[in-house]
Image (cartoon, rainbow, N blue to C red; front, side, top):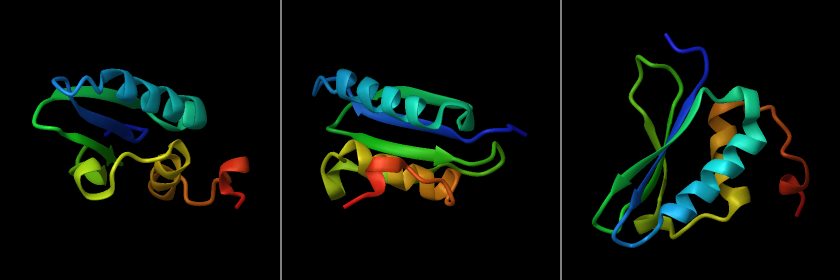
Length: 98
């Protein structure tokens, strides 16, 4: 069993969303540093941009963001949905202020 949660970002290569996916990955790694075991980027097509969180290796990844339903997230929105699964008690600092 993996010790840390994993995040996977599926992104459409035909839409040229690889830089956007890399930016989100960097934001998550910087924010959650030692709390994530992996942030993976997974090439896809068909206009896909989805973010999954897998809490344990024996559990199915949970879809936490789908561009087709919600559009692209702001960085703070994505951090908040990941935080709510990974470490609900964690304060995200300035991202939490209104």
